[in-house]
Length: 226
Image (cartoon, rainbow, N blue to C red; front, top):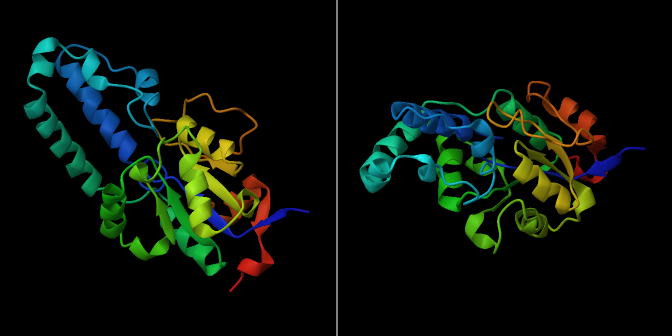
């Protein structure tokens, strides 16, 4: 018999909304401007966490000395592309299906609350999530499990009553450490990370709630159905 769940806890950047690919592309372009290559494997170390990889360290001294100006231009370009992008394909329909099925939704992210609320509002998703567990509400971000444990506490649920959806190795490691059944749905930047083959994985959200529950090996708990 499949276990019944009452909630889904989503990562944000790269999972609901793929900010990560835009950010990597702009940083890689900056490196190329100076005849350098930004290795994807290096960048991946910092995905889903904070301060694990410093892209400034690989740039010439002259660029680092002009960091404020360079960063302003870089950040503006990233925000422009992010602002013109939609959530990942299938995400909006999945959220609607999950809520219609009576599932409670939450976000657990290493990003700060202002960032998450800004982009949820941008995509008309502010009311979709019951709780947000964000960067400054815990002592340690992912891959530490604190953010997922906080989300569970906010929901008032045990780990066996929810599943997590993640795109990165750091994020999925955090969710698994919190005791959550975790489904990996990588994006362009994280697809080649060395996820353990035993972790459930989907290549996208187009299969909707049914595909997510099936690969996770769970079903909606009877108590969740409205």
